[in-house]
Length: 288
Image (cartoon, rainbow, N blue to C red):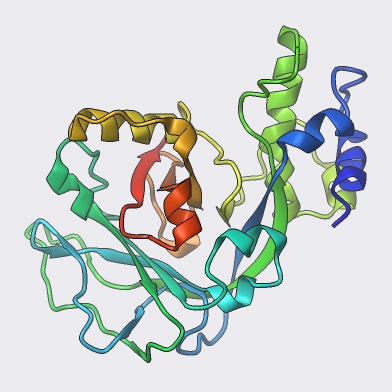
């Protein structure tokens, strides 16, 4: 993707005039890897949403308050190796994401860190399709695997919510926010299709992606999660040391129901990402 050319094409669809241009935005861009669901058979070890996870034999299904977590998705990192942004990830192996997707707890104490889990399995580890543990909730809410879909990956562009180095007035700032929010829409729409959409129209489609900048529903999810982490651990935590690992959007087909059209964010320390350490990932979720 020619990033500058694509930005120019996208900006031409907006009534932005001279507030900012592609040259202004280039230093701010972070590439991300969009994730689109696709119906079809999911082979063991392939990237997928939902269903039953592929785990090494003997792996303990993660739990929170004695209840198994919900398996959200797994990413075969070899499938991402040709994307520029994936250079910060291990080139092989599997990332597997779990979350307490029914009660959606907010993090208030150390035990709440068990309400999610991220596994990283090296490529040489043999995986097997693993059933959910037998478990019945006291409230009779249905528990078990989510709908299964394979994942199609596509490179997208993201922008930060706050363009710190740009001197924008109020109108230009609002135009920037609209543009930044719409930029990942390339995951589902061609340029021709985007021309037909109103520049303030929400297409209602889910935007799941790895890396890049998150799309906040409320405040910055990185600011929120690091502030909470600092209070709980009673340590100094710098939000600039953290970045987005995975954003999972509201998606009824996947049974990703995060409150009122919300999002779940997996946030990782930049040094941990560099070193392939996924044991200390932080999570928050937001909704309208």
